[in-house]
Image 1 (cartoon, rainbow, N blue to C red):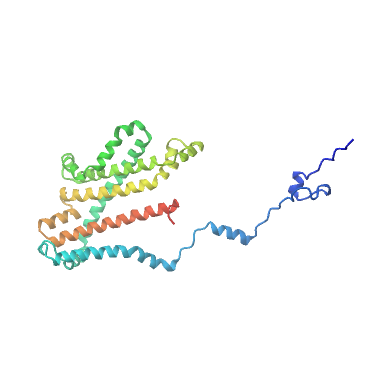
Image 2 (image 1 turned 180 degrees about the vertical axis):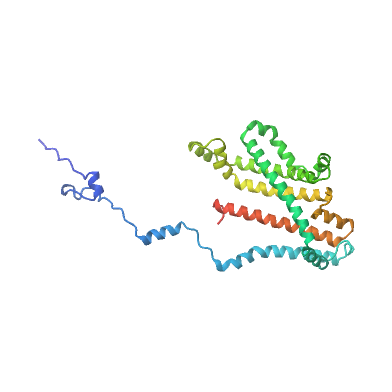
Length: 317
């Protein structure tokens, strides 16, 4: 009778882990792999891969120049067109003065204390109104995005208020609050709040559903879910809504200062209105440039915040 072959013996798991094979099983099966221990220099090299590249301090001036020259070129083009229109005598010089007449006036204006008092009053109104609009818009946006019946009720109303010209609110504001600070703040807040609310609603709507399910698995619910997951995830869209809300509040404020002159206050809008009453075209254009510069500076602050947020989220290099 044929004899059955003896069963082949393989190394056990313990022997394989310890790297020891019995003499009977030598050469039967693959050699167990040993884990290589990394040296300190190799570990340091791997850690360096996770670090952001060091900023090249020597190229700071070049980066500033690359950011500044398009703006300088745009300013030069506008001034050139302005000079050409002046030389073409499209309007008399007392209506449309030359740039060489306006820019020295700007320098003389910004070196006076009265000018900065007016700027401080205008910016105080702007920051106060915008802050109230952000607080109110955030509450409304969070509530509308959370409760479907509320969105069905006032969702379209918020968009309609956003598209409504701010100047339409001033007759009602004057009737409600007379010629006072509250009338201006009322229009600023009601002009900026819908943009802030819509920005938050849009950001919450585009939060990935996977993130919401992960938050639910981690036990997030109620206010904790909004605070730690939904609101941080909606920040990019919310910042865009804040930027748009600032634009609406700034335009509303300038219209309010031209229409609602509060006794005893001299803001930028009041000074511009006085210059118009005196038919002082150079001074009117000067204040237009001042308002434009303030708007550009605030816009750059929002762009910086948006860029920092995008960099943190890995959306830019």
